[in-house]
Image (cartoon, rainbow, N blue to C red; front, side, top):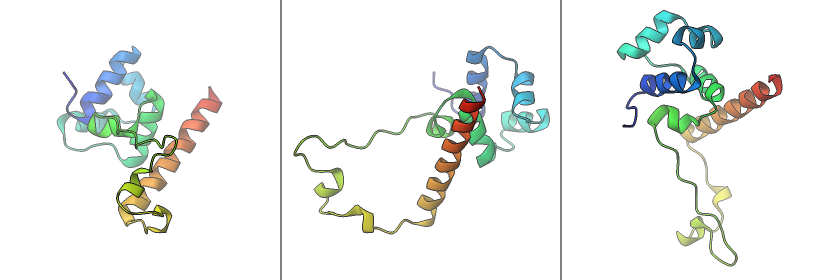
Length: 122
């Protein structure tokens, strides 16, 4: 059965890694009080902590947040139209991003930089 909450997914990752919850909290500098609040549903990890957790366990933010991986966009094969061409949109680079899209991109860039720095440390 698929874990339903962020906490349940984190708990599963901890179990699969074979570490204790206490060790996990110490390594990621999470107070046991905060961790307990996540379990009780009183709060959830902040964006930066989610990025750290995803990088630590080498999982995607999508899976950590919603339990599913995002589906890959259609890949262009030889002589086949891009997905945006099918909608009559020939130049998607002229579209303006909304604030949510901009924020997502910034968070993803931070996540990628953090993951790279963690890999270089190891």
